[in-house]
Length: 136
Length: 47
Image 1: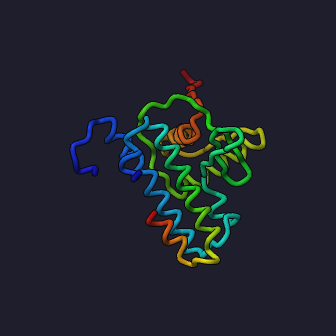
Image 2 (image 1 turned 45 degrees about the horizontal axis):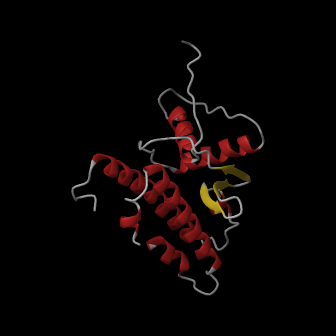
Image 3 (image 1 turned 180 degrees about the vertical axis):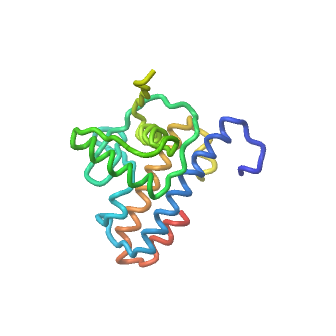
């Protein structure tokens, strides 16, 4: 399909889907490798998962103890980051902090993806994300 | 309708959300049917 003649927006969308599906495939592979047999197992609970609530007619996300409603922020057709195991860990940490009404302050050397990862998490749940540089 | 068809129908944001929702549902479905079908998770891998 991707080797065919696609217009730019559709190609961008398919690139995002391939990026996300590659991660989804890796997660299922990990569930098999680690012999997870229940949806309560941590390996599955620690994943960002989308569900449709038929009563509320709305989408929501679950990750460990946190539950987030889909934010409906307009995101356009932009690229998505490749999700690594480290990304999964910061997703769990950040969302549990949000769930407990706390903040999250990723720390590390410049250019290692702290801001981009935070923006990608916001994109995943369609919430607005504003980046401020307080030293300007 | 195949995935190759439905993903063309909606805006990117909607397709990504539906795709993630389908994945979550497929994997949870696989967990639920693991007792009767030990290969359910492998099947979810190719779904």
